[in-house]
Length: 123
Image (cartoon, rainbow, N blue to C red; front, side, top):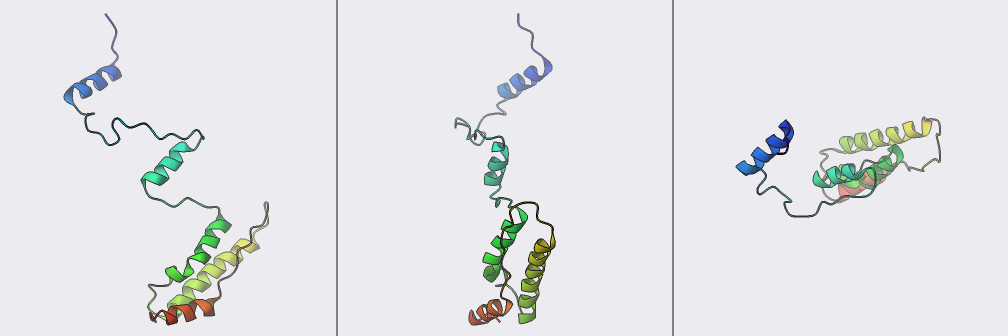
């Protein structure tokens, strides 16, 4: 006769009721990464999230996507405001003391972004 603890009994009873039948991924191998942060990568993938980048790299990504970011702006003033807000965050980055290798982040050319926004016929 084998001893069954409370947890084992709960699992056995749930299995008998069929509560584990037809679960997503049933019968498929687990996609485990050998790194320590495998669960973070799995969560990012499952939630369709962008990877979290360190400050300067996130700023660079924002600079690269500024054209798309201002596409929904309704006025030139709003486009300029968004560009200047990004430029101010970049300036703040440069004001902080260096803690390692400095990553270069270029400022947004506000006039060029506004011109592109106008050219696409949005403004």
